[in-house]
Amino acid sequence: AQSVTQPDIHITVSEGASLELRCNYSYGATPYLFWYVQSPGQGLQLLLKYFSGDTLVQGIKGFEAEFKRSQSSFNLRKPSVHWSDAAEYFCAVGPAQGAQKLVFGQGTRLTINP
Amino acid sequence: DARVTQTPRHKVTEMGQEVTMRCQPILGHNTVFWYRQTMMQGLELLAYFRNRAPLDDSGMPKDRFSAEMPDATLATLKIQPSEPRDSAVYFCASGLRQTYGYTFGSGTRLTVV
Image (tube, rainbow over all chains, first blue to last red; front, side, top):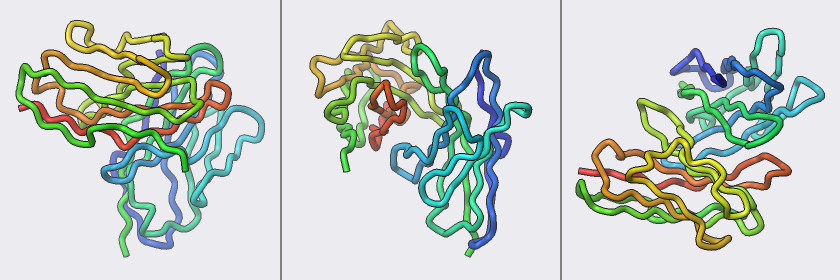
């Protein structure tokens, strides 16, 4: 069965510090991988996606993620966080073929200390 | 920027009442999803349409939930009768199959008392 695990429910970092949010997936076939961000009271916004090719993908707002097949991971990183990055972050996995239903992780809530 | 529009943004209703949530997908998008978000379950897929045809509604309680796309500009999710356990935020998302990047609406926050 498909599943996505985000081990950290809540992370707090200081403004200007680096960030890494973890995501592990379980998938029987070649997955497509996504990171979404949700600000309070808003819908989810796509940060980046990985389909194939270069395992380091760049997204919006200065985020990047690295796909590591051997570790079944797709961790999200940012070199220097800004107060506006405080939000909930969701990792998701979907099939390369067939119905494009995304399975989401439980989310990681990011708090930024000034 | 093109956006997915959901109405209403908030809905408070009494148990047993019918609730209808509406979604206007982005013009030209051929795929529409309904998701439900709760603290306990996170994001759950309820239903999925492509070219207005329902492809998968296995995540939806069939006895009380129904989802339709009367035309390409409107998707509806109906609950009848509503129950307190249906309290959640319901999201609609639309996209193009080819690009696989979905745009989410801002959601409808439903409270059933």
